[in-house]
Image (cartoon, rainbow, N blue to C red; front, side, top):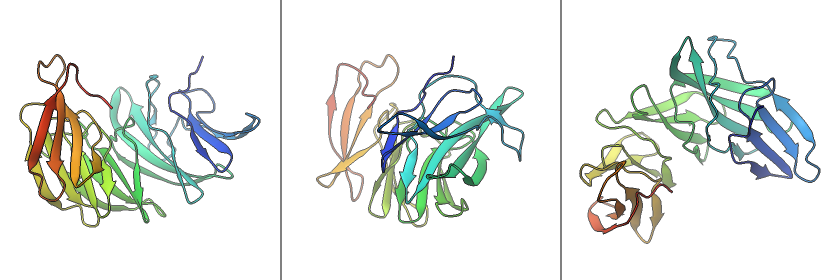
Amino acid sequence: GDSWVSDPTLHDGRLYLRSNGGPSSFFCLNASSGEVVWSRTILENSTTGYVMSPYSYPVQSPLVVNGRVYAVIARYLNGDYSHSTITCFDGMSGETLWERYMEYCQEKAQIAFSGDKLFLVGGPTYESRVFCVDAETGDLVWIFDDSCGGFNTSVALDGDRLYAGDCYGVMWCIDANTGTALWNQSIGPYAITTCPAIGYGKVFAGFGNQGSADPGIVAFDKGNGNILWSYLTDARPLT
């Protein structure tokens, strides 16, 4: 049978979560009773014909804000998995308010939200881009292209700056309003493996490669990206 593939998001007495396939793939449940308030089939995109990926693996929790529910949905057609949609549902009724078709977006990375904008990672090659999308309309605001790496974790938002680490060990600081890179700093031949954490004027992240002998945690100066310290761990940090 089908399985739940996202953690639930609790908002205003309702739970929002994803299942893998089946006639209904997105659910809103009453948090008190467990009854289904609404459910929506997201197997096929009527515009492109791309259908939802049938494989069961964890995806990001739905983002619920201002009465709307946002989810990234991987799509495929004839073995091509390089496409996605970001879908916006009405939180009360489940009506699809808008759906934006885009190049493959990372389903496992959480959507970030600020003001009236959504931020998410994706792109055709190892999720090599950061997208900014208008939360009200689904219009694309800007794209940041990391042509030499690729992002496989969520971005971190701090004021008007985004922080994202790529698969080649580079931490990026991006202007959230324009999509312009403000600084970048390399830690060497290691992937950034965790979503950055921001605090105390620093950006913290885990790093390491599969089977790497030198995984660890690194701290960058939030303002200029200088490496302040690093600490080696016994295993590769993943959260």
